[in-house]
Amino acid sequence: MNFAVTDGVSVVCTRYITSKKYDAASLFFSSGSEFKSDSDGQYKMVRSNKRDTTFVIASEPLTFERNDWISIPTNTLLVITPKLNILMYPINDQFSSDEKRTFTNFYTSR
Image (cartoon, rainbow, N blue to C red):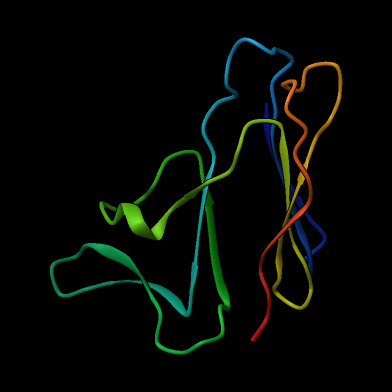
């Protein structure tokens, strides 16, 4: 189950499945300064400064720029904090793989 919730300040998303054998449905995110269309009508994530202020979370990449999209691992909780940090926490339960994963501070505000 992919699930997302927000209080208008923070965002919490999960990519989760109750199976050790299968991956959960895909979930990706992209971040940058702005998500906008170019002159050809194609959308892209623009990085015009060092501070990420725009985030897109989607079940599949929304553009052909694969390098703009990061896959959220199976059984992971993603948090976008009020300071616009992206944090990923593994969901370690009976359905987790045998390899233990740890917290990741993916991006920090700049």
